[in-house]
Length: 231
Image (tube, rainbow, N blue to C red; front, side, top):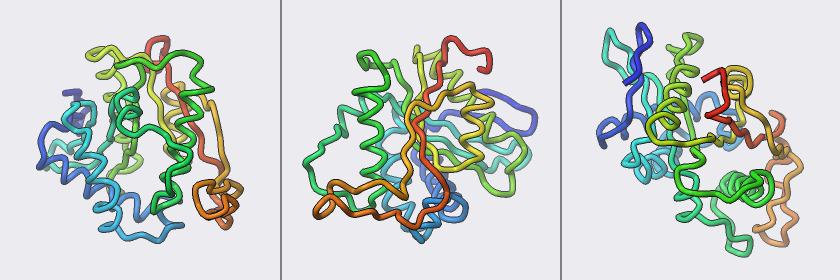
């Protein structure tokens, strides 16, 4: 456990907390995430299709964290992570498989494949790259350092307790991007603009599902956990 005045940052280690964290993430995304707003999906849809399945699969790796407000005990933030090596073993990129229901899933997986094959520049091994899937903070606790504290607690734990050397994340929220680049010292290694991205797995491969998206490119961000004065 990592303490920070009014908040504690803890490993998500049981199903009860994991479900509460998935609910929080679904609500935060449905209300504030630019891509979620574009999709016009409800918090319940996000919970059922994304947040709970993602967290259910990985929370027993004990790499995902929650932020708890000390005075009330309420969970006010969460971040989901796993080992990129094992994640890629479970969900390898297949360029000829059928499309996923939501185009963003294919876009993110395509970008992750580019990172592994081209941008990382070395062989991916177990417990080498921390794969951060999703994070969010309850709106009433935003601008209080919770989002940064949560991510730092995760990165410190992954590095010091589990031996991870890097953290990898994809973001489509400018505030979150600022944290990873400016507060955690991350570097953008690839950027793709969803508004011009072609959904190769859909139909004739010329579909552009995010043509009207106006919130800018989505980057792959890599954080060096070892040689980093910010963490």
